[in-house]
Image 1: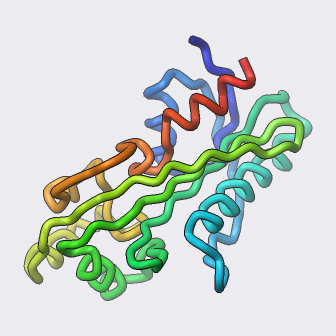
Image 2: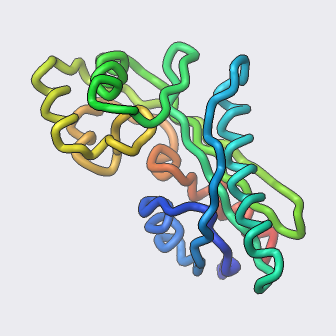
Length: 190
């Protein structure tokens, strides 16, 4: 199965690695999108909106170039209805990791594909259970800086694997790009 060459509206190294994993050729498109969570917006609506806005911004940037689909994606960590974004600082990371400690939370990842100005999305929802983290474990993990630019202050594919007891769902979705959903969307453009 050959998937089409695309534009990726993301500078995330993880999303680049994941697309390469399934053999998708791509060029990165630089975009600027406000990723703020709006008051009253559900977590699922939030990731769908931001993923769509990213893909559309990429489409607008490349509309006069070689026509091909544009992929945008967004991921949110959700616990008790609260959306955890990227930590602002170490204190914010400590608060997030303390909240996740010993709890099960959801990771929502939405992929959006734009072609000819039309947006199609698919959202994956996975569950992650953290072990109980003591102060020293949280301080150690924050000091690694691995979770500095990650939703929920952790990276499942890195050292945070030592903090996780159980995963239910899509590993690639938790990393930031659900590959099964991505390939389903891209198959429409063969």
